[in-house]
Image (tube, rainbow, N blue to C red; front, top):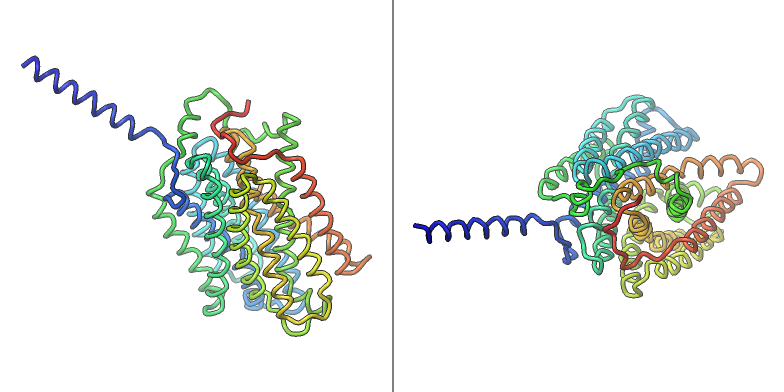
Length: 430
């Protein structure tokens, strides 16, 4: 009997050790894992919605009774409301991601976005439209940053670059789906489908587990998600500002050069043939998906995120210049320039990864979520500055000067930021 008791006790101890082993957070080496898939699909929905508005801007505003120049004026107003929602949501979801957990934020953000997008299909006034774009942006704000944070923290140091690259390459294709949907269905149906996609993703997230680094963080006596910590230390604040400035050219290109490529190509560049804004957006994002894959792989091959970014910026400067000096070219060549601009700005996902890797676990979600949303929000300032300069120097010069400013600040920031390839992320900001 005593021997039997000892055997039972031994089995119980072994079972407890096994359960402890199974519950311990382990870094994932596989590139395609549930974390990457769910984060990629979250970004897919994010991009689908961001691009969707640029595509349905004209037909939806026409349905509300707007014509002529009001289509551009009201379109900028709605985009600014969406970006304001993303900035607001970026701060809140980032703080909650560090305080309450990465996973809970991913559930709430997609739910809010889904319901807002469904409501978008039923707006009847510009006020309702603006409010729902704000709420949709508010919900979407947490998708990319928290998703990249989760992927970075659950994958091995060697392979996390591949993981975040897959998130970008797959996610950006949401723009292609947005174009296909709007080409075959009404703008209202496109919004409804975006909401349904979000709800389906919500179900899939049941299978995702919390980051091991965050689980460990909860046991530490350290401030979590303290947004103001980013401003109380000069070195930390400088890094944060550099991260934001690094990404601004992306939304200068997407939010102005591509979104209004139909107007710019016709009235300023006099392109031979018709440029359709929705088609330009789709072509640009196909390039961005390939660029995301390209720059991610280059970074892994060179074992340097910064070297990959330097190459991407060289391509970006070359094709931004080509865009501005494409006077009188054919629409085919202009679309080709837009495609290569997309490849260049595919560095976006590396920029978000670098931002995530610059900071400790207790501030990582806050930074990784606020930085891309502040970049998106910078579009408000970009549009305002271009509008301010147009009366004095014309649309072409105004857009060019603002582009030079955005790219110059990004290049300076890249020079100042430290290399993060292979960096150990399990540490705290004090």
